[in-house]
Length: 106
View 1 (spheres, rainbow, N blue to C red):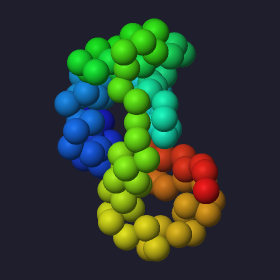
View 2 (cartoon, rainbow, N blue to C red; view 1 turned 90 degrees about the horizontal axis):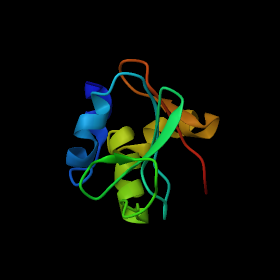
View 3 (tube, rainbow, N blue to C red; view 1 turned 60 degrees about the vertical axis):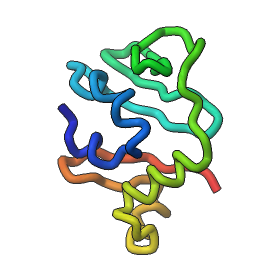
View 4 (cartoon, rainbow, N blue to C red; view 1 turned 90 degrees about the vertical axis):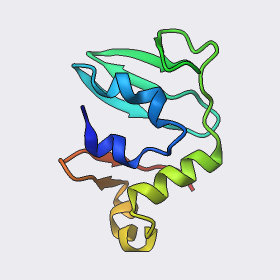
């Protein structure tokens, strides 16, 4: 389990990703406003359904809102984004355990 990642997820997203965070070969999780949660596992892309299942199709998936992304960013920065300003400018924040969170946008 990627506990460091699980710990920063908004409460309404945690149950959806619990099983996937235990998946062997998880390489990347993508969170984008207006898009479904996307995972890369062993070189293949998957989306998370509203029930928390992985699917290769983006049909009936959880679509992320601006509010969810803002909460996620706040959690990544321990509710103090100004303390992480330099890391954010470089395009990523490093979590405990060495996981890197890429950040892009305005």
